Every structure is written in C-alpha cells, then in structure tokens.
Length: 620
Ligand code: PRX
Image 1 (cartoon, rainbow, N blue to C red):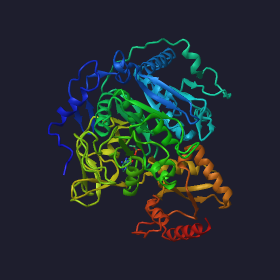
Image 2: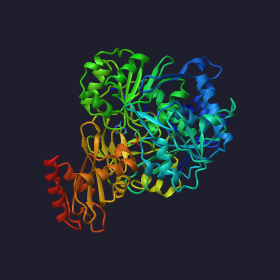
Image 3: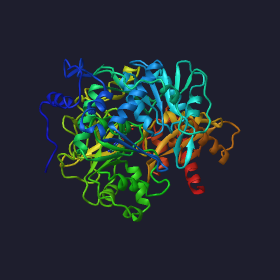
Image 4: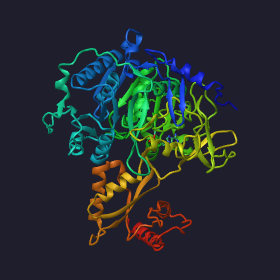
C-alpha cells in the first residue's frame, strides 16, 4: 500500500520548500525553536504582495487571468495578473497617503468583492497587518475584534449582496465603532448608489482617495517572522483568539501544501468556495493560488441563488478543474437530487477538495460520483486557522489509495500522532487526541497580545506537543479518521463558533438571565446551535421572547450563530464550582444517556431540562 513519504531531514525539506517563494534577503537559520515559540527563517526578508504579484510581472503570466470575479447577478470582472498588480499598487498607495504604515492593524469587513483580496494584498504590500472579519458577523463580534486588535483603520463597503438582497454592512461598522476612540479612518468602498451615513473626518470614500493614488508603491521588505495577519477564531471560553500568522513561514507552508494537495498545472482553473473571512479564504483563495500564478474563480453569492444549479453553471462556464468546498454545501446539494447537476458539463473537473468538517463516507462517495464523475480524487484536507495550511491530506501529486471519509496521512514534514489523556501514543483503532509533535512553518506564531493564552490553549495539555482540540483514530493501515472536536467548540457548517460568544449575545436580550449553548448533530450543517436559557422574573417563555433572543444573536453575532432550538428552563445544571455542565445539556438535547452527575450542584435541574426538552420537542 502506497504511503506518504517520510522526510528524514525535516529542516532541510522546509528549506527547499522556502526556496520556492521569492526572498529579498536569505534567512540566518531555518528554525529557532524555543517551545512553544517558533521563528522560521528569521533574518530572511520578503513581501507577500511581491510574492503574489510582482514575481509574475515580465513573465508569461502577466496577461494570464488571476481572478475571474463573478457576482450573484452574473456580473463578471476578470483581472489579469498585471491588472491585479496595478489595482493593488493603487490601493496600497491610497492607504499609504492616508497614514497607513508597517505594523498598523487594519480590520477588513468586506463582502467577497475583488477589493477584499486587493485590500489584503495592499496591506501586505505596506507591511500592515490585516485582520479580516467575516462580513456576516454582527456588530458586537466585529467590535470585539476591532478592539482586541487595536485597529487603526477599518476597510469596508457600503453593502454586501446576498440572495438578491442588499446587506448594509457599513451600518454594522458604525454600530461597532460607537464609543471607539482608536480607529482613525474607515475606508468605505461604494458599490451601490444607495445613500449611507458618512462620519466626518473618520470615514473616507475609497473612490475619492484613489484619485490621488500613485501607480506604484515599493513593497515593504519585512522579516520572515513579521505578522502577515491576525485572524480571530472562536475559543471555548472568553473572547475569540487573535491567531497571528508570520510572513515567511506561513507563505512557504501554504505554497508547499497547495501544490502537494491539489497539484495545480499552468492551465488549471481553480475555485475555492470559501469566504475571505475564514482561514481557507486567506490561504487558499488569496495567497497560495496567487503565489502559484493560478487562475481562480471568486464568487460573491451563495450556492443556491438565484437557482439551485448556480455552482454547476460556474464550473461549466469557467471550465474549473480544481474545486474545493465544504461537506455542508455538499450535503445541502445531496438533498436536492442530481437532476440539475446532470444538466451541466462538469468534465473539466480533475481534483476535488473538501474542508472544514468530517466528510462522511456517503457524502464522499456522492461527491466522487456525481460531481467528479468517478474520475477525480477527493482531497480531504484536515487543518485549522492555527495551522495555516493543510496538515492531513492526500496529495494529488503523489496519490495514495483513498478511503472514503479519511483524510489519509500527514503531509510530508508533518509529524502527527494520536495520544491518550496522558500523552501516550494509542494503538491502531483507538480513539484519542490528535497531536502535532514537531513545529511546522505554517504554525501560528501566537495569540495576539496574549502569549500565555497561546501556551495554555495549545501547548499545555500535552508536554512538547501541539494540541488542536480534535479527536481522531488511526486504522490498521495508518489512515487518519477525524472524529470531531474534543473541546466544546461548535462546528456549524464548517465554521468554529465559541459557546461563550453566542451565550453573551443571548444574555444581551433583555429577557434572558442565563444562557448555555451546545452543538447537536444536524443533517446539513454537521452541527446546529441549541440554546438553553433561564428567563428574568416575570418574562413569559413564549414566541415573542424567542424572537427577541434570536434577534439579539443575529444582531450581535450574525445569522451563522442563530440557534436551531431554544429551550426555556428554570435552572441550568452546574457543577458545585458554578460551571455550566454543557456535556449534560448536550446529552439531553441529543436524547443520550447522561453520565456521572456527582459533581452537580442541583441534580433536579437535569431532570427539569430533560422534561422541558421532551415537552418542547412535541410542540415543535
Ligand atoms: O475540528 C476540525 C475541523 O475544523 C476545525 C478547524 O476549524 P477552523 O479553524 O475554523 O478552520 C476551518 C478550515 C480549515 C478543526 O479543528 N476540520 C477542519 N477540516 C476538517 C475538519 N474536521 C474533519 N475533517 C476535515 N477535513
């Protein structure tokens, strides 16, 4: 049986991979490892925008399409590499003339318009650190991230477009910035003729400041360890964590694994359906494909609007050869049957990718047969915001035998294992904690402003090992099978959501006294949010109260966090030290057996929660 090759000289291997991207100055050492802090390629200098754009100028790629952008309504804008280079330079110049400097933090709150990628690359050109916030997040989620990053600037647009509706995102920025004193400018990209409120001095219309922009800005050389971006990911406690990625190690890594996993060719057309607001959109919509000189499709709309076959139209139209999406989307399409798929010529497809959650064997087989026509390998990529790029994944360059539902093996240079609660490797077919035993270039360099949290969350559970928070199992052939999160984080439609953030959005509703959130299995989204609440005295547990709670969550966190079910209870099961026992709530919500409750403060509440749940289930 074919396996991924084992690399004996790991540092030498990463040095070779680093040489595939352009550097201004060479590094002093491949890795300085002072656990848990890694410095990859320190002393080497480079620039991410240069690596994505300038390198292609004067080559045959100059006039090759970098991005085919398409909007929901069919509007299309192609950008060649030369055009993208021009746009990024002008964007960077406008930002620079308005005060942006190296190391400034810049929050991007943008829909999937070309300017989202352009703004990321423009910040990178100046050495500024972007922090993209998913544009469907609500005002409180946005405000927390702006504050935590101590952002000097925000870049946004007047509206997003989704399912034929205009989404007023500038308005969300205004609410998020109420009382803020740090943000100097909000740059607003106007894409509609609708009127918006502009705050004097603070808000600048981007189109206006572009008029004075130069055509070229020299890319700022930064050290390999200079942060390229901060991207927030949800934790199980407290505020979200600002995951910081380096420039040199990160770019080396994503360039390497993109090539290994998908094996793009010069004439490939690639489409990753992720939004730039997530890590997949950073690594595999923006940076890796552009470094590779690949032609990509970037699509603003949702999968089923205006018609259920929108995605298949796009694959046919652009002759997409590499298609990368999530199991949630696939499960949704499975429900609609294959008639509309069959109407389209998908014969250009060569490689199919999957990300974000476990792809169950039925979905894998459906994807393989109905989208891939039985001829395309399914590249199931297991990774995280923190890992920067793929960790476990088959390689289309050197394909192993695939098993539906398994992410196969670790990519070359990556040392992954499964251990028990004591950090000891478990035998085959035994469930345990997935761990990574050696640093890798794409690893996060820290949690923004909180080195202790970085150490505590990722490096304290097992000595000398990185802890991602996933359960897994290895079969007799050494194939890895992911089994979901080992912490309380929710994975809804491939997106991690923290319990704490949703709970505080629920408690912000006037009626709610206490809230607890759990994730339960959902046929389409993998997991769905279920909310248990206790109400303030005198508040009725009725539909009106429910609507108020849902509105609060939508407003503060965004529609993604909207609970599927809300249960009103008199008290929540808690340990004697006051911690909510989510494990118990989850078991009740899933109709499972409840384990040990000896540490509970009030066992009666378990029975009460269960009864309410049974009663509510009947009335739904
Ligand atoms: O639980 C794993 C799941 O998503 C988590 C990472 O989420 P996030 O940082 O938001 O990044 C998502 C995009 C990379 C992981 O800890 N996950 C991601 N990919 C897979 C997966 N679970 C199973 N199979 C995958 N291919």
